[in-house]
Image 1 (cartoon, rainbow, N blue to C red):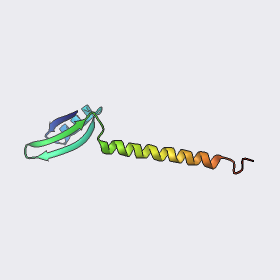
Image 2: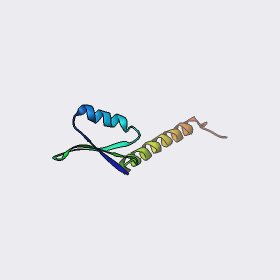
Image 3: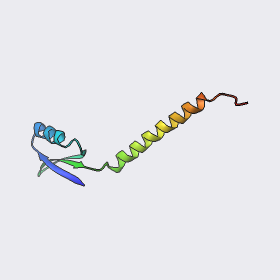
Image 4: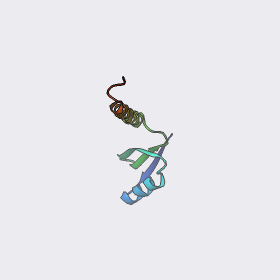
Length: 75
C-alpha cells in the first residue's frame, strides 16, 4: 500500500520522514499541486532484487572461503 503526504518546506518534509520511519520513501513529487512524499509499506521490486543480489554475493563469498579452507589433498 502507498501513502502520500504533502509538505510545504524542508522542516515539514523532515518531520514527515521522521514520523514514517516504518515505511519506505519511494518517491518525492514536486508538481503544480504541491510537494508530496510517497511512502510504501512494501519494498519496491528494485530493492528486493538488490537485496537478493547482495545476499547471493555474501553466500558466494562464504562458499569460496570454505573451499579455500579445505585441505589441498584429502588422501
